[in-house]
Image (cartoon, rainbow, N blue to C red; front, side, top):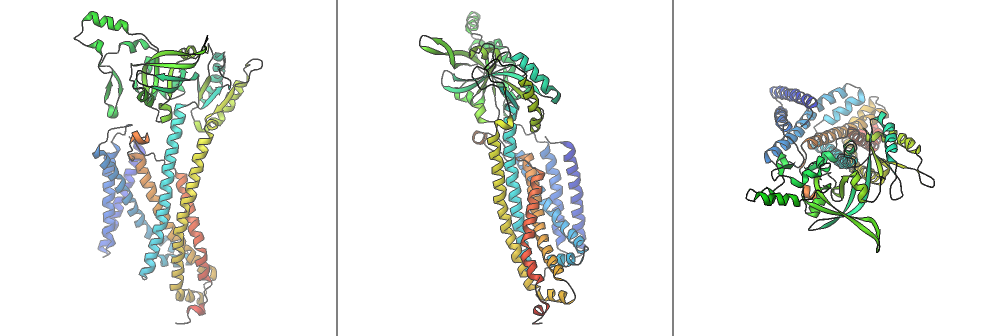
Length: 564
């Protein structure tokens, strides 16, 4: 669902604009202008957009919701009618803007009149093509920027949701002890900023089931505070987070227990259970129940569960290379666990490798005693993590780690993911530069248009100069013509991209989650990016007018009237 207040404002503005187009079309028809039909059709698209968007806004968009053709048709129909309606409104506003320019002075008056002139069909076609070239280029640049920004924002959201914003650890293996005091000190430091902290034990292990094996990164967590730091609890699709604390419930789950919700909210049941069969003798049932061992719970990723072919309630074995020293050397430690829940983080790397167990179980499994691997910290605003990191560093520096031992290391998410986000930023800049070349190519059409206009308007230029127009005034006329052509193309291109990307951000393009690991195309509409594209397009178009405008200002009145 979408925010009601902004959507209501959009609906009201759309209705007013549609009514204005309808009135404008009726007036044009009464005046005998065939353009009135176009404005009336534009108003119809506006009313259609209002109705379709109203129904589309009520369509729920759950993650991995089942495909419904009706909902998709309504959504894309609202998107299409909205784009056409916006183009109609912009086209209707053009004469108003040109009228205002004609009142700004001599150069503006002549330049606007030249753009509106339709006597030369060839020049009109070239001018329209120039506008279209700038519009398509700026629209493509805005759209690609929004889609790349959407992927970047989606990736950042998933990384920050599944990882701590600040990590306090040591580089040596085995972690560090006396962590309760350190945890309290760090919590006290970040509390004024609204931060939270939790202890974590991390280690590598090999997970195995009856049918397969896979590598896993096992993290021991404090079940009381982990939800304050990462989104593990919200990401659980099947199972129950509380079963990590109460593994006894996993040993005797009835077959009709709802262990999750599927696409569209359909319940997932545990499934057939031999011990729950009504045909069995009560004594046999009791014997089967006694054979079930109480095992510690483990929460694993969706892809790891697929790899191991296990469901909630199934057993898996974790093997740690950090075992006990025996006659044959270090012997790996193994322990059986029962799957308490399966989570989906949206990142394949996490879902295929991560497993979570209780903190004390992890300390025992990895033979760490009372040590922990790290303290994870989360802040309310990840973009302002630089304000909190010094506070954590100051708190960590107060603790004595012992003689000859290194101090605690403090890293924030910016430092830990520096290479990744730097690559994304560089990719965005490179894409902006490459697609800006398309706008530069489109500006060549403006150069050709103005040169042809100078050739055709040679007589008018000569007359204006003979009447006293200066070279600067003539130059400003043709520069303004080029800026108007480029400005119209920019407004149409950026406006179309804004409408289309805003609609895609709401309705989305469905993708196959089995291939792309996301069910909809992420789109991020950033106003600053659009403003940057508009400014860049206008600058390029303005530069393109310099040579033709200079050529027009150098035209001699004698040469212009020589053959008249």
